[in-house]
Length: 169
Image 1 (cartoon, rainbow, N blue to C red):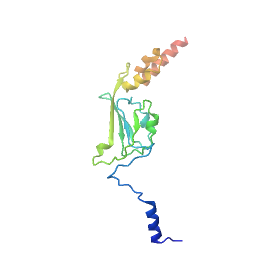
Image 2: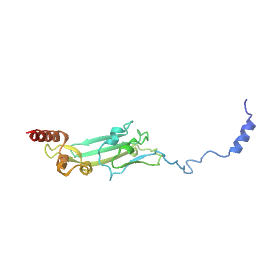
Image 3: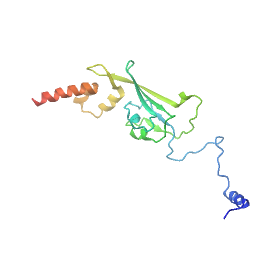
Image 4: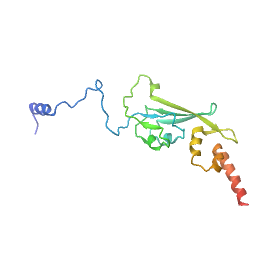
């Protein structure tokens, strides 16, 4: 059965105003709202866990071997605000805020770049990890094995293989 226009109008009057005067009045976002992610540059160690878990590839990593710098790049234009980066970050450097107004006239405003200094392998001299990542990992490694943290994966595997072959004899 169809309702008449007068009945619809009466129902609307009983309900009252349900719209907000946004953007002229601020909107209060609900608890648990997943808004703009941001990276705390002081906490980030450059491990890349965030970039490897990001479904839309909003996070990426670039290594500048000439300068010895690793860049973690967050592009909000691709972000789907899923929060996976926040969940996997071992140092809690990525947090989702309650900010949702991200429009900009300049696309550069949609990028956040973190640059971290990299360490050189003590044997071959190649850059292989960030200094912060090595220091973070060292806290959980026995003291006698910490010198291995200063080697790239390739050199570490060679040194470990030599050590194991000597230990057998």
